[in-house]
Image 1 (cartoon, rainbow, N blue to C red):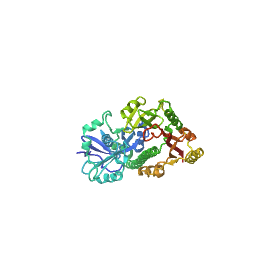
Image 2: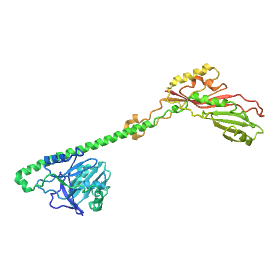
Image 3: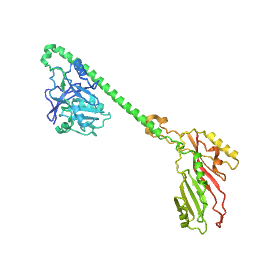
Image 4: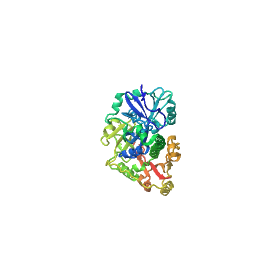
Length: 470
């Protein structure tokens, strides 16, 4: 069982250091912790502080943040001998975020805490159960990753004894590569109480002790404010990072224009018509199977043939494979397909300037009105999807306006135009920046019912999408 070292003053929650013994090792608890203003050259700072407040001993904890724990005792108390600092030793064993209350004896409790890897100054205390419970209640609501405490302090906390956590093996492993751990150091030669009486007298000593206690209280308050400001700054920085990530998430959900990745409409039409009309490319009849339709997307063509009486599937397959790399057949329809020649990839059109929706609609109607060869084909506007409310988590971070995924800034129209005239001439100037051609088709009837050689009327069809600014 850990015991309070005899001969030390009665522990309180004021800025006073006491010593406990665990497993034969003396540990100082109740230090006054300050953050070093510089990561190196801090000894000058230590000496100035101890001189100003009449202190003699300190503990150094280096790492991401250099912290100095000052030993605070009443005037005339002998310096601590061969003691280690308790809280930084526990920090090496328990991690970067925890609050712990540990019972030392029946009447004495100690507490320590670490947040974001730094010792929390107001958590390093020693005293009676009621005193420690009071301080525990002030800080337990902070965002600790782990809380260790007796059930009488917090029912949901994990109970842990100092004898267990400070076992010799655990402490030795935690100090690997750091040498002696966190020893209490001295800045000045030890001065006995008798010498203090000789140099200043009892009244002066009492006054000095009062002044030291006053200044130390102010110093502790300043350090607590500094730590609170540091935590607030970190939380603010984390909040800004979360806000930036939320804004980026909303942007990533915004609609992405697809037409820059598509080839120009003129390119698709030109390649398809060249492939369809090429001499000897598409036989009108293959072993009694008659041409009905050819479809092209700019990269490949697919030709459909209808069976006439007396024509067989096997004959079609053999003959069609001499002209096309891919052939299939069903009871009444044979299909042959292959690449558009030459096999060159079509370049995407990239970013282009789109006309407005009004301009596109007027240009479409006017073109077919002037053509006067058919009824004006319908340009069908795609309906917009219902607007979904933004996720509450994003609204909480960046507000409802910024959390709302933006609508597309363009309109989308689908079309299908059929004509007996060559489709490139029919579409003419409409094959502009905002038009994406998805399919060019040439079709005909298969002949009369008896399978005679009469050929139907050829019809061109073009399908696609028109994009325009809203």
